[in-house]
Length: 139
Image 1 (cartoon, one colour):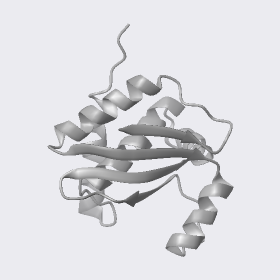
Image 2 (tube, helix red, strand yellow):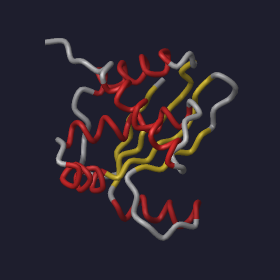
Image 3 (tube, one colour):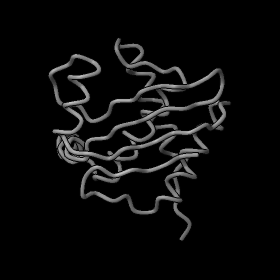
């Protein structure tokens, strides 16, 4: 089950559509959906987590804690909405497009994709694009 939680004023539109898309992403990677919690927050909230748990004194858009067991994906994914807004402006994309990238990024980490080296980062970006292309809203 994919859950959305809010530690800021931001509220996700179309929770059911987003959850359905993320579930399809999980299936497309031959994984099983366990319990995945998205926590939407601000920079200050995520910075505290980054310091406390990862000992990183930097701002970031996403931190994921992976509790997966075997093929079943489980975890907590924290998303700073402030970082998503800033990144969207920096990358000259819409907020919605950048939010989708960040949301799927966390799932892809749980699927085993990394982004610390150049080759891994290129594969992660390719996978993000592939999975974003699966997203559609019925009109």
